[in-house]
Length: 109
Length: 114
Image (cartoon, rainbow over all chains, first blue to last red; front, side, top):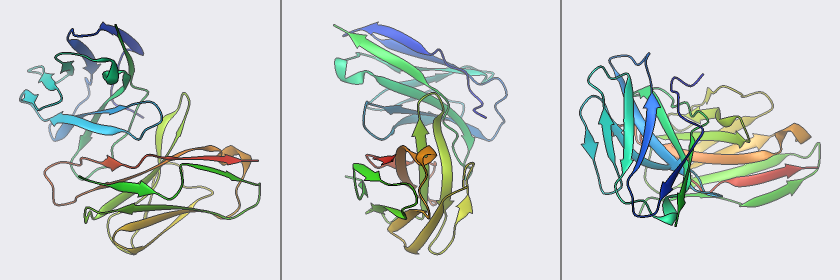
């Protein structure tokens, strides 16, 4: 069973920041938070991961709360091409990743 | 650019046929995975492999087998295809030596069993 809870869908205006929440209240100390996305008819794509510090890369930022029970993926300037299903996954290094239902993000012009 | 390729994007087979789905990665990754994806059920892990000739069952291995004779190639086999195996099949690979379990996915094979 997935260890995360995400809203089933969200809308975002093009050019605005998209903030996708994820709850993982049972996360263990050695478990990472991973984010992937899946654009229609494609395989999932890795976005970012973190353990306890906030992380940023060329695609997104990941904000993890101090108690690590929740996190937020931020796409700073969403475009229409960011419309996808976003998966928040919790797992320890070396263990298999379990994909839940994810959040459908719709970016609208 | 990392690359995971799958032999077919679309495949139609008949009930009872033996089906081979091939996956090739060019990143020298140790780990390879097979998932299936169905509406409302998300991605479910069928089998994975941590090394050549090694395999581990995932969450739904029944009705499937795998083969990993070479590091870059991981095959999923449906010994006798059934209609409930109609699905999107996704292959992925990852590096054991990396700092994370970042998995790189192929484009998927949409299999229809009639």
